[in-house]
Length: 277
Ligand SMILES: Nc1ncnc2c1ncn2[C@@H]1O[C@H](COP(=O)(O)OP(=O)(O)O)[C@@H](O)[C@H]1O
Ligand SMILES: [Mg+2]
Image 1 (cartoon, helix red, strand yellow):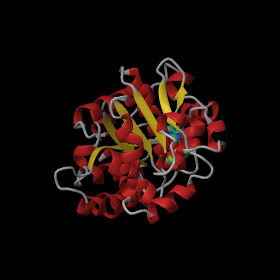
Image 2 (image 1 turned 90 degrees about the vertical axis):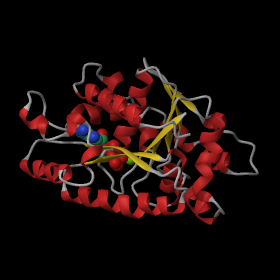
Image 3 (image 1 turned 180 degrees about the vertical axis):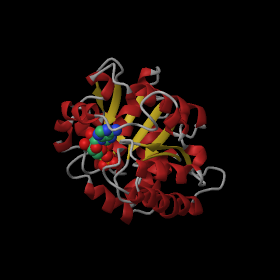
Image 4 (image 1 turned 135 degrees about the horizontal axis):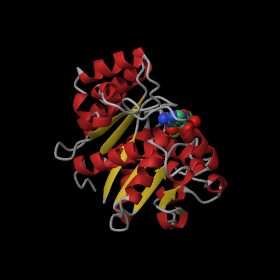
């Protein structure tokens, strides 16, 4: 199995959108995929039409509890569609998990031990949708997958959040993890790009920084010169509509132009990934 966590210490940048549509594109490429929603807000759960799972009595907390016989399979839902994949849903009580992971001896390893390891031979890919705050839940997701994708907007607040996430989360975790199995960035994904000059400025700065190599080819400044929509995942109302309908973008509109970019992102990640789990 291979895994990736979608993380950035900022809300509204498209973590959930990237997690859902990346999971769907991995499935479209023939993989068995598990999406794990560990954000207590439950946007991914909602965004794939499983909001009823958000209020069930049995949920992820019971899977993580050493003394509880609940297994991941007991909570997993299937997201039906042409490219179906599975979901570990979030729950309205999921905030409790954060507290319990914090109190536990090796809470950072909990998602690996109780979700990922038991399902290692069941799935090709596991995708974690992380909350916008760095803390025990987000860290446990990154530790479980060792690989991250970072969506961002081409704005100063997002660029600041990228530096914060790398410094306070990824470097900090690497200081505690074994050197042979560090956390790696697989891609940085400019999202909700509208095409103004301020975005161009931020993208130029990214290309001149240590983060340059993580930008997918469709998200580079060269895309300003070539025909087509311009760099990055563009701002498209179809993303919000598909979310409202509770389906991935491909199920909402199979001709949406950004699907190709998500397929390219999935392919780039498959190339970069090492069998991390
Ligand atoms: N490329 C895009 N174009 C238009 N709307 C988008 C795009 N990406 C995300 N959104 C919308 O922006 C909002 C925040 O996105 P979301 O994925 O929930 O971010 P996060 O998980 O980082 O908080 C949602 O309403 C989502 O539908
Ligand atoms: Mg989210």
